Amino acid sequence: MSQGRGSAGPTTVIVVALLVCLSVHIEPVHGATYIVGGSGGWTLNLSSWPKGKSFRAGDVLVFNYDSTVHNVVAVNRGGYNGCTTPAGAKVYQTGKDQIKLVKGQNYFICNSPGHCESGMKIAVTAA
Picture 1 (cartoon, helix red, strand yellow):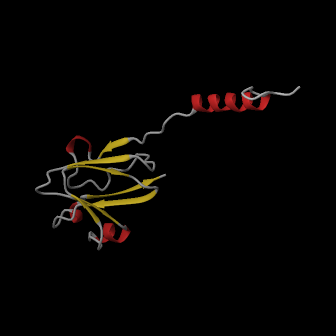
Picture 2 (tube, rainbow, N blue to C red; picture 1 turned 180 degrees about the horizontal axis):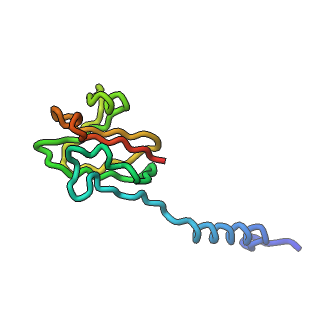
Picture 3 (cartoon, rainbow, N blue to C red; picture 1 turned 90 degrees about the horizontal axis):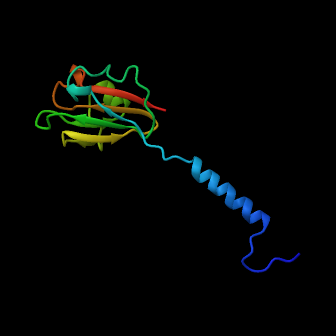
């Protein structure tokens, strides 16, 4: 039996049915949002804040702080361990920064004098 133009054969029907099923089961994935430091915000003595939390790539960290006193600097491991700002490091200064985590290690410090040394730094591992 020959099929004319515009008629749907069994293969077309199966493909359409599969696409409909897939589109029903696909849900958009949104990362979680974390307020760094909780209600106290981004401040001193936070280096243990990430403990017990499970982070994933795409999650967003929100840093709330007084921008006349603090900042947030995305650094590498050396910058984190030594409380230094590597050349080319991204410095955030709005007081309401939202930073999306990448897979692997993410390091953040405040580079105001003495702040990182006083624990104003976090290391976050995102799966």
